[in-house]
Image 1 (tube, one colour):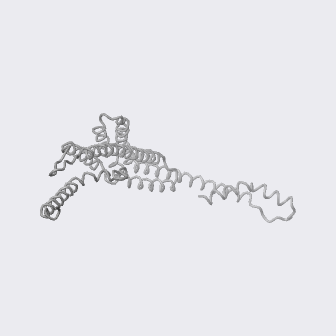
Image 2 (image 1 turned 180 degrees about the horizontal axis):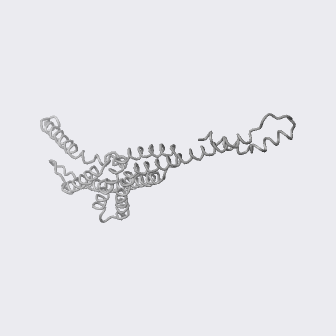
Length: 277
């Protein structure tokens, strides 16, 4: 019987082959939709792709557009005599879209928290350094070095602080209807932004403060010079008055009396002051 229907069987196999080709084409057509499903570490992907407020907003919008496009996918596609259901694909896509959305929110919150802590630490530590008044030439050198280091990081920290406001707006826009506490993070970002005016004024007033301290130290050193010169003059007068002449007797009592007259501890103190000066 097969022999008498050879041509018909050949046509069946040809049509079957064409049918499977169409099914393969259909599979390729929707294969790109499954790329999100194949992402194992979605958290790492989001952190890599979202390094700025603009990128966060771009990805939120792209996810929203993809979600709407997925909703428009047909439930069934008829390929010749076969009816292909896209229901399982649409359900899987919705689950993964929701997972991607939650991951975006999570990474956004974590980014804000880390940036808030970094900017806050920078402002707090820098303010403490700038508030201290140097008391010596060495202190002034250290303070100027600290100022240069603070100034070198200022632009980056200000950019992060401004970015926090943008991130807070994005979080408030896309976290609507969730349990995410947007007010707390946005409030912290705003409070940091308000500190920058005072910090900038403090940075600008630093050089003026240094000049004042230099003048104070100069006056203090001049006073010390005068005091030491007076002490040297007094010591010279005392030395001339009490300078021992040649001892006739070098017995222990005469030697002790000579050192007592010279007030030897005062000599040591004065010598240390002169060496330090």
